[in-house]
Image (cartoon, rainbow, N blue to C red; front, side, top):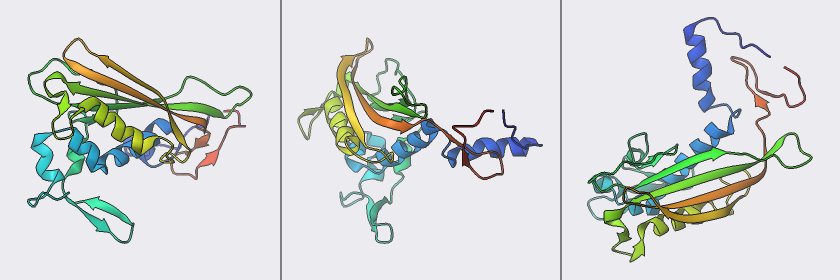
Amino acid sequence: MIEDKIVSKTDLLNKLRAYRRTPDDDNIVYKQKIEKALLSNPYLLYALNEKDLESELFNDKGNINWEWDEKNKKYEPLGEWDRYFGSNSNIRPFLFIPDTQTEVKHYICYQVGFDEIPRYSQINKNTEITFTIFVHGNDRMDKLTGLPRHDLIASIIREQFNWSNIFGLQTKLISSKESMTDNNYVVRTLVFQIYYDINGITYSPFGEQSYIRNNESW
């Protein structure tokens, strides 16, 4: 095993913080890409129907609260759209089963993983991205579109991710299932697959250059 050259607690923490920037772990990298994609999608944020955050999504004139960034050729939010994301917010980077509650709130949870390696390959995998949508039973329908809210949210996610290259390789939808929890939430689960993804062969030692180590013993 290759040992990182760390001496102090500061070195240790810097090594762990570097996981946000290094490409070694697809779970972390892909979840960051998902977060960025979801938080830049006003259709999705609207469909979550979070009344406390509506003033962040729309301005006083009723327009979407963003502006065009000519340099990067994309819209950038002017409101605090990142408030939709977090361990206690609507969008969560892990599976969370909400408890029964009187407050009407909807959730999107996402997971990244794989359980299959393609035959005859040592460095590839079939990565799966799973979105689980929980819609509170007291707000099942979006009144302004007339659509079931969990189906509306799922359709927005499907449109954004299916056959996209958000993760660097093409992503395809392989499963879409509807269910219900025993605590008044309507659920839809979407599973996307990245076929023949690279199986974490990049290694970034602390304070050193990243390199490929798929053929190296350690």
